[in-house]
Length: 385
Image (cartoon, rainbow, N blue to C red; front, top):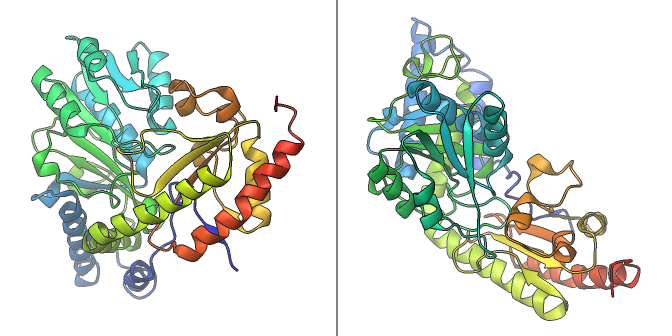
C-alpha cells in the first residue's frame, strides 16, 4: 500500500484537474499579463476568470473584491497591517489564543512596537466566549482578527455572530478562513466580514498562492508596495499558473462541496469512533459537533505524539501532531493548552485531517495499525501510572 495521507490541514495534493489547467501557463502561455501586446493581454483575462471562480466559491458578487497573494500568511499580514495603517490613531487589536502563527506571531511583534493585543480565551471544547469578545472592544480597537475554523481541532467559530458584534461596534473584522474555504459552504454576501484570508494549497491548488477578500466598503492600504497589479492593491508580477490553478480548485470545490463534505465526515467519524472504542484512555480534543468535516484531533494518554507519528510513518501513514507551521517545536500545542487539555493528553495528541482523496481503505489501514502502536508505546511509557 502507498502512503496513507491524512495530513490535509497541513497541505493537500494538487488535483489533476488543477494541474492540467495550470500547464499551459508554465509552458506556452508565458507572457506578462501587464504587457500591452496581445500575447500578454490575453493572459490577464485568465486571471480575471480565476478571480471570478474564487469569488463564486466565497459567495461574492463582485470579483474585484478578491486580491491574489502568495499564501495565507501574506493574506493575514496584509489584512491586519492594512487596517492598522488605515486607522493610524487606533492601537488595539483583538484576536484569540488559538490562532494560527501567521496571526499570533504578527500580533506578538506588534506588541513590541506599541500596539495592545487582547487574546480571547476558549473553553474546554475550543469555543470562544462572545461576551468576552464584546467586553474587550473599546474606542481604540482597530481590528478583530478571529479564525473561521481552527487548524488543529477543526472547531468552527460562530463567524456570523462575531461579524455582527464587530459591525455593531464599528470595528473592522478579519477572519483567517484558510482551513474553512472549500470544506464548508458559506456566502460572504450574507456575512458582515470585512476581510477574509484563504490559501490555495489547503484546497488542492499549489503552494505559493493565496487570496484576500476585501469588502468594497473596507478601508485598504497596500502591504506590498510596487506596481499596479491587483488594481494597485498588491505589487508584483502575477503568478499566473498558480492563480489559474486556484481558480480551478475553487470551481471544483464549489461543484462537490456538499456531497464530499458528508462523505468525508462519515470517514472521519468511523475512524474516530473505532479508535476510541479500541484504545482506552483516548479522547477527542474539541467540540465534536461544531467542527470541520475532515478533522479529528485525538489525545492518547501517557504516550508521546512524536513517537506515535514516527511509528505511523514506518507503516506509511502521514499524520501530524498539530500545525505544520509549528511542527519543528517540541513545545506543547498552544491550542490544546488554551483549551485546558491535560498535559498527559496534549503530549499524545494526533491530528487526522482527510480530503477528497481519502477512502475506506485508508481508514481501515489506520484502524489496523494504530491501536497496536499505542499499546506498544504505553508498555514502555515512563508517564503511565
